[in-house]
Image 1 (cartoon, rainbow, N blue to C red):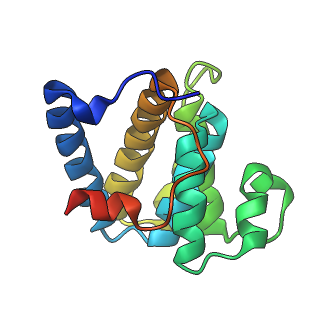
Image 2 (cartoon, rainbow, N blue to C red):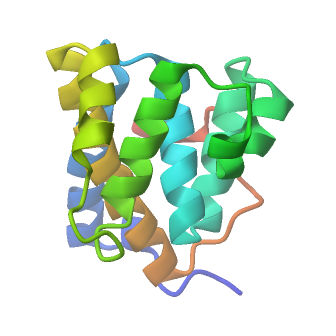
Length: 161
């Protein structure tokens, strides 16, 4: 199935997409480690069922040197031994921040304490912003039926040039 709508082919959609991408650049250029950014984006995308974003973040993470084992285990990170405590804190925040409707209290105090333990204020600002941004990206892609499978590492960065 083709995408329902070419948001980049529409004047308003293109203006929005450029600003959306600009917000992403702020996060990409932050002190939040790139592997954390990709793992968090991947996990939120898995929860939201966004094939386009899963495709993108798996390929970007692999191109940046992330192992296949770790990528395969992101969906079951709580049941694996390959993620650091800092990565687990970020993945927990991604899950709880994505599943707001499923969680009575949103992000738990326990998860927030782990995030505070492992990340400084600038990294937390980037991490919280990333969770919000990837959830918005997932919603755009799912609503428009953007499918996964054709993304190649570096395509997003090239599109911004």
